[in-house]
Length: 422
Image 1: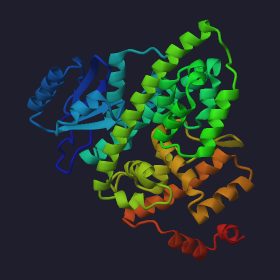
Image 2: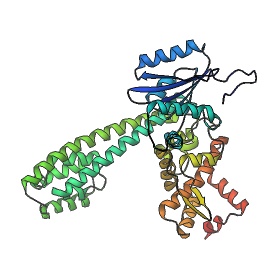
Image 3: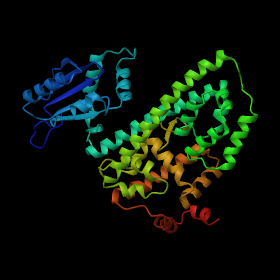
Image 4: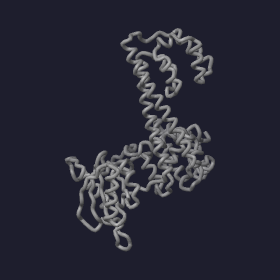
């Protein structure tokens, strides 16, 4: 299928399917006026990519070229976005895999075949594909900052879990003392006293000075910790256990320090960039958003008001909307498996924070629990409603107002109001 303009000129001079990889990319190309397909292998090197793009520009006289690729981000996508005549059509890898399986039940896979399948999807189903329309550099930078920060936070969580596991084997007191272990205080404590023996030998004044230096000025808490040290007994005195665990804990503490510094740098950059974007105040004023989730909500919606045709489209894309399946007389509902995980986490985490800060959100959550929903299911249902509300605010550039929404519920005669007044 070749799409044409009103002057019967092909919308694109050529159609290309790409199967990308780390070191090379398999390409299948078909010119608009031809039925012949050309296969090539493109090394993943900036100069080779630039030469290949230049050859396309010369061959098709600068006319637009459609490229289908099974990702919306990554090194090759970033490289191709700088060419104004290249229009990218990203597809879900699962789409290509199921298309391949439909015609190859044996599930045999070959890279040139995947490039050809991507081309066939582009030619036969382009009306179902959306061209990649990058947002402004500032929004894309903020999105990348937020996602990379989340990766570092996940790394920090893994390090802390390993620290906890190892401390329980030889030094449980250090684990018990600090509820929040993602802190400089926790790192400094383990660096200063990596074993119970060293802590037990420390002078009282040294411990008092340490805690006060780290902004712990509660005399009662300090006294309780000092009494614990005096009365506690070591879990083990076996050097065959203590020494290896000590070395491992010291190494993990160094890693934890690095993540804390990196997260702080990301936070500073996010705090600098986010307020400069036009829609920041729209999301910053939301209940429970603040400096952490306001930038994530901003990126979730973006700046292109035609990005989503409806709130339902965003709910489905984000994985907030449940999926209903049916077969014969049976039907069942489950949550979406395929979705941008970080985007779904953004809406769910924020929805949970609105419960103590929004009258109707708290009432709705309680209503869902009263109906038998588990905590997470109730939070997802709340997030579903919030997305619909936020979509309207975002579309009309109107800040959210709790009283306005409550009045709207009253006009509609919502049964939720009975819960609010109960």
